[in-house]
Image: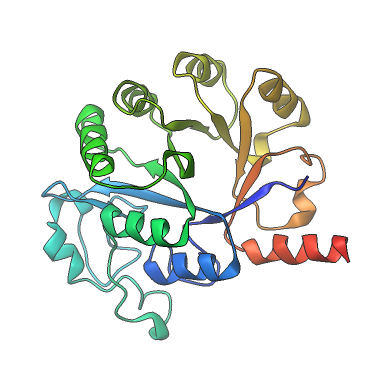
Length: 243
């Protein structure tokens, strides 16, 4: 069975990443899962953005956590990618969850931590989830920060957790067990068939990022899911094999 294809930041190979237009493109493509990044604004609104500054992906300058949500909403998060995307605003987690719930799409949410307190950020996330009706089965939470993962385990009972790492380390293996993780998310370049077999044997799913060519998966055919900027390449590839 082919791996689940997860739209990385929506369909970020063709649309401005982490924006509504990118996520809607993933939905229209028929994807069942997307991946996004979240972090808090200055006034503790969780927003969908990868970088800790707005410099690269908007017409503004400054740190996410130095700007209020209202200030962030005044910035254009689409024009940097192309003029036809002008006017795209930053999404709040609340808006994202509502959109995903309407279309019954799963979300892998990566929690970004820089100078934030892990317990505080996860508490914000918990409060948001408690006011949302989104199905737990369609949510996976991940982070490179092990303190964040431990806080997720402590505060978000019953949610799926994915340990995120560039390559499988002993500390990652220990954390997987410690937090009763659902999955391990690894850079495909540093992941071997032996890693996948070992993780599967221990009861964990293996999701790999960021895979943009079907040809790069020859040695990792048993992955449970892959993250891709160009998910349509994998859909078309699968259709070709079926035909």
